[in-house]
Amino acid sequence: MSTFSKSNFKTLNYNSFRPHYPPSFYKILINYIQKGSNQTSLPINKAIDLGCGTGVATYPLLNFVKNVIGLDLSPSMIETANSLKNRRLEELGIVNDNSGDNGNLKRIQFKVGSVEEFVNNQQSGIESNSIDLITAAQCIHWFQDYPLFFENSSKLLKKGGTLAYFYYIDPMIVDFQGPFKSSLNKEELIKQIYELYLKYAYNDPNLIGPYWEQPGRSILKNYCEKVNSYIPKNLYENIEINTFTTNIETKLPNDLKDLDMKKLKISIMDYIGYFETYSGFHNYKEKTGNENLLKKEFLKELLELTGWNLEFTTIDLVWNTGYTFLRKK
Ligand SMILES: C[S@@+](CC[C@H](N)C(=O)[O-])C[C@H]1O[C@@H](n2cnc3c(N)ncnc32)[C@H](O)[C@@H]1O
Image (cartoon, rainbow, N blue to C red; front, top):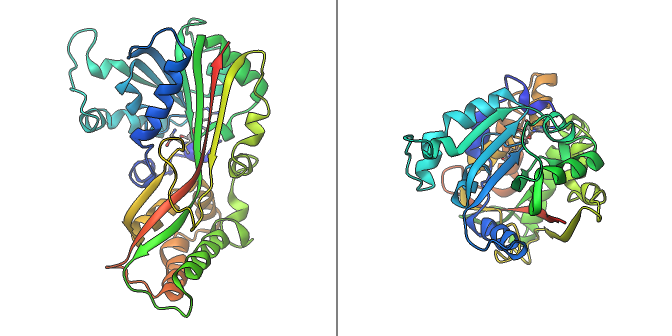
């Protein structure tokens, strides 16, 4: 998947506008890890976060893993991940101690490289049967050759070790605060807003839809069912698959079991900022030269539809999500 590794991809914007995985999700993951191992105490020893990007899911692993490696094929993502070290450790409340062999900065390392080389072709240089946890957040849909990936991930994992992949797909505005002007009632209006989002993201052949790299985006949109279909049952057990689909009636996920991705009361411009981090939008911009599709055209249609006010309106955004956890036999 090459869009994220293009030198003009804005990795700092990516880090600011993308949602982060909530503490409730790491609790679900920790419960799963502990259920399957003899070791009930934390921290576990070693984790690898594949397709780590700017380290969104990598840094929080330090809360329950001693040593973490983040791997990504994009040099600019890794540069940003490294540049955020001090800030992220501070945010996580981890003392930023660089002294001695066990200094906290040394507990996390980022490497440039592809999953295909590192895992599939076994070029990691990491001992077999030595890893407690492999994560792949919002990226498994880009990987090549799932049979080989599952086989060689299991070689890196210790017996009882966990492979966890998780992802979020489309966000839906489920509620908003502030006045609106429309002949529709609030629920109907929210459905229309989602239709407008879908038109820009996928459905109109003149907009972002044709610019997604495939088959990655389709795999993701189908809740990674294709990836799940390759899980080898002879190598993994306790397969746990969870998906959550947003709708206006249920509104919020159940944070005890779902990957609960939401941003509440955000500004309209933050919503647009998130939409602008889509790799499909990056490709659209490059091919058409139109930088303003979302900031101007989408925004104009959105405001016409809703009568919202850029200064006062806030919106509640909830993502469709999913995760799969596997334990090495
Ligand atoms: C949408 S970002 C997710 C980043 C981060 N894990 C997160 O949750 O925000 C996808 C990342 O996967 C990386 N990626 C895609 N395919 C990859 C591969 N085959 N090997 C290594 N990294 C890959 C991209 O460079 C990009 O940084």
